[in-house]
Length: 304
Image (cartoon, rainbow, N blue to C red):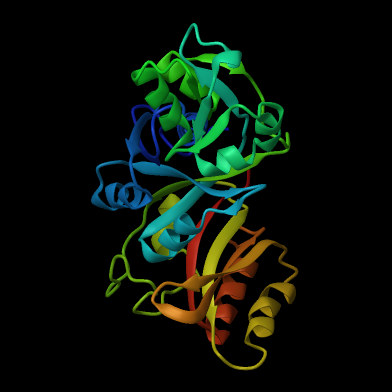
């Protein structure tokens, strides 16, 4: 998927993880010709974006099997960024080793814990191979190849094999072939007056009713919106919040809650709804502001 409204040539794009990761593949699919900037931590991705050392970032937000990437959901609320697009990448896990290594000679296979968990059948079929947690899928391949390990391999995508000149010993070892990760393309947002970067909750109630400050970031044909909001602690608050969408026949594609950092037993609701920056959506958000404690528009973009 290309994003026609975005100039893609030589755009620096931050990702969390090593080159060759699934985030790397998603970034190149979303912004062909971009320069991928790997970051060790998720917070570093957002910091680079806010400082302006990269023009955009691509982050995984949800896996069809493992669920939401909690840290990224929290950072979308805390930081001044704006979702400009989404992309669904089919996740194919491969056993990748140094050239010359045979599957029968493996004693260890390294990868991110989520990837290992998605390949349980492989380890059941090969009980002599130990599953070893590692910080990153592509990072596991990088480690194996850089250290010339002859009894170990990594589990990662084909991009990692190409990046580090590894050999795929077995392809498609994931248990469930309907394994997808949803990625967001995010850009730096115009900071609100009085807003404090990194605050768990906006210090001032943001204007959610329109995207006036973000209009330049909304791609033509945008038809999906992501928001976060906190309800007041009164009876019927969540019902009233959701009714603003039902009253206008706006379809919700996702809703979930996350605990607020630094505010025990208080929660933020994340909602995706299938409308862009049009009058019904703006009216719904204005109505939501009246019944919620705070509302933040996380992005308005083209649905994958």
